[in-house]
Length: 147
Ligand code: DQA
Image 1 (cartoon, rainbow, N blue to C red):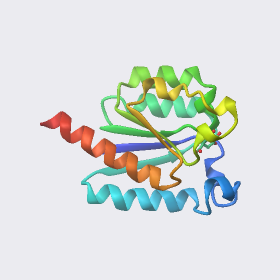
Image 2 (cartoon, rainbow, N blue to C red; image 1 turned 60 degrees about the vertical axis):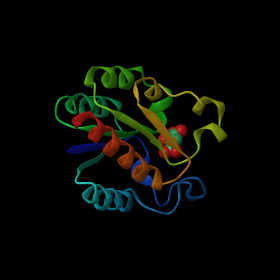
Image 3 (cartoon, protein in one colour; image 1 turned 180 degrees about the vertical axis):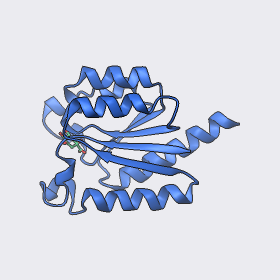
């Protein structure tokens, strides 16, 4: 099974971006981590990042009928984008929402997520390990579907 992992705006800056919040790992480190872990679960990963809302919308649309699962860290678009919510509803792919930081301990404008409305669940506050937890959650969901 193919798992699409999509990352939104400013996540290309990981490593140097507010390390006290987001850690010192780069997005490329997280990609390596995800590929390694997915392989142990018999899954393949497609890993992408964009600063453009429309590009994320297109990539989400393209998961339909092709990806077995989606892991989405939509960055700040999480809190603003009805277009991303609509793309998720159209794609109908099991989605796990991930945030490195615990968005509920932060500014109140980060407490609401449009992504959450279309996701199976959300993992936040565990840094890069959240992506691993999300892969495990999807592995279990996919297995459940095929039994
Ligand atoms: C984030 C949380 C968002 O509120 C923020 O805008 C980000 C990163 C996270 O991974 O913790 O860009 O999605």
